[in-house]
Amino acid sequence: MMTDDKDFKDRLDRIAAALERLAPTVVPANDLDSADAFVWQPEGERLQPVPSVSRVPLDLLRGIDRVRDILLDNTQRFADGLPANNALLWGARGMGKSSLVKATHAEIAGSEGRLVLIEIHREDIESLPRLLDQLRRSSRRFVLFCDDLSFDQDDTSYKSLKAVLDGGIEGRPDNVIFYATSNRRHLMPRDMIENERSTAINPSEAVEEKVSLSDRFGLWLGFHNCDQDTYLAMVRGYADAFGLEMADDTLRADAIEWAVTRGGRSGRVAWQFIQDLAGRLGKRLSG
Image 1 (cartoon, one colour):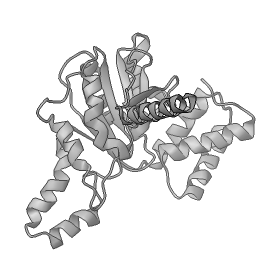
Image 2 (cartoon, helix red, strand yellow):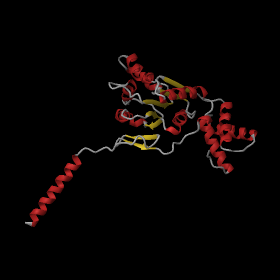
Image 3 (cartoon, helix red, strand yellow):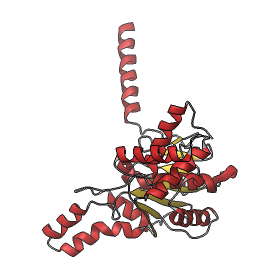
């Protein structure tokens, strides 16, 4: 009799375990007031708080004054509840596209936490509608940020982004704006566009379907390779900000030599030189 009871209990335990596996996963609610920056994790629909964002102060970004002012003004209007545009920051590598987005957020958010920055990875674009469902219920205002956004052949996830930027049936939430950076003006490689022209039954329609994605961004902000004077101004700005003392002629010569070895000049190259210089001088970069 006791054996029968044990077998019955074992069966009940197995049934309970099977039902538990079949039950839908309960997604815990995200605390959108817990931080001013998050990274979107589509698995589990979780917003991972970022206690300290890695960024450069706005006043250290040189050679991009015009696009800086445009993005700053657009973001300020959005934070104030006024109409503002989605923005595509495109162009040369290492010229401060992602740095500008993060620095602008820091400048506008301030101590009041008026603005929240949420990074979404390129491969998670198709989950954007699920993220927006969570954000539209919040009283805070959000900048969604996708770094290095681009699409390749046979990649259809760009359609999800088009629907979000257009608003779809529900419309893009008033408390959300989308900023993206890309090395490509139309978010797709030139050979992909040319391939559509050469192989499609209706080439103009095929190309239009793909390049029209960038038209959904109200702001196109171009970043171009910098000249030597701008590059040296970046180096000097960093050196002054971090207290790296070196004679102007020596700093200039070393910075130019560094750029030559890297095969180009950019804000990223200037920062990498400063890191090397600080190490040689035995200084820590803080401030």
